[in-house]
Image 1 (cartoon, rainbow, N blue to C red):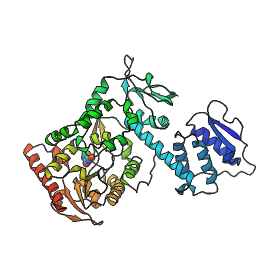
Image 2 (cartoon, rainbow, N blue to C red):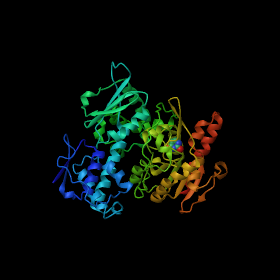
Image 3 (cartoon, rainbow, N blue to C red):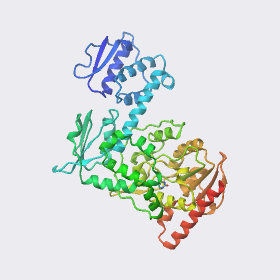
Image 4 (cartoon, helix red, strand yellow):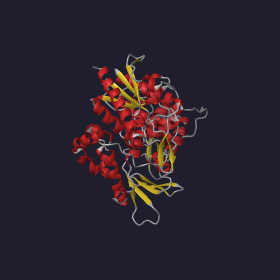
Length: 472
Ligand code: URA
């Protein structure tokens, strides 16, 4: 038996060089034991390349897969990868065989690791270190898999100007404003417990919490309880849920508000373009997080998928997530969303029976100081993202699509449509659905003159009422 001792739990380079030598030396998978810990890389050195060993290359998809899988907590991850590597030489198309037990398991593990990384981006909360010489923040986080190394860059790009540490039980990372370093794991006791920022964050969270779209099951699946104990806003959740109905009534009557939190740019990640996620809406929602079809993902917090019943009769298509949606990961929950909710309520359309989505799934913006200002997506970005909208249309198969504004209309029809001239018309689409075009609620928010705003709002409500009428 050849025992290979890797330097760390996520030692991708160590695994790769050992696996390459083992494969070239024709050492069979069942003759190798993989360990992690102190010691020589090869406690029992594997043979060198066989005399006539022919070097063989692996497909880039395997390298991507293996880099992800080494971050999984499964004990046998290195052995599984070596088994796949071993087989790839004689079965070069193995990775395409999703029914193969090894491949299926590795793909599941890859998905779990990507999900853990996504959760980390969403749920890490920093606390200020009291009495530190320079402004310093620390976060404690327990990722489902060992994703700190691959996710740390995200925080560096986002919080480039502040010093911070992220502590996890596996390892910690430290950013001093110039360099990112990694060190041993840590304990929760090493992170400060609370600070003034938390009060600010709680106030912000309570203000973006949208009682109209409260779905406790979905909320607890997207924000699993295992993360709650480290989230300052978690203490609010039971109260917000209990108070949701009363707030919904107030919200329907109230004016829209302006989002208060702006963040800096997100990191560049390796470009990937998984053409997956045809199946269900939840699968699509997960796959959108991996979308690299255009560059907008780079500066966005996350992809914002559509939301609503899979068999909704009406699909509302907006332009793209705004600042608040980008942070919350849900469409139309910011000021434009509140305007839309109000108009839907007046039109007698229940939002929870609609499928609400956007033409473009990532927030396009430019930074002005610390503010993230909306930028209209370009034709290429709309076309790239149509791939997702088309899938949503195929899955939901709505009878009626309501396009809000020019970007949405271009995405739905596949060409530019004149908004004001198209208003009041009902179009037949190729897939048999009907479509109407109306203005975008942000347009109403931007109108400077109150009288014009009231008129435009009344027309908007009328368009939504006629949409309801079209379905009887
Ligand atoms: N504007 C949109 O078009 N979509 C959103 O989700 C929010 C604002």
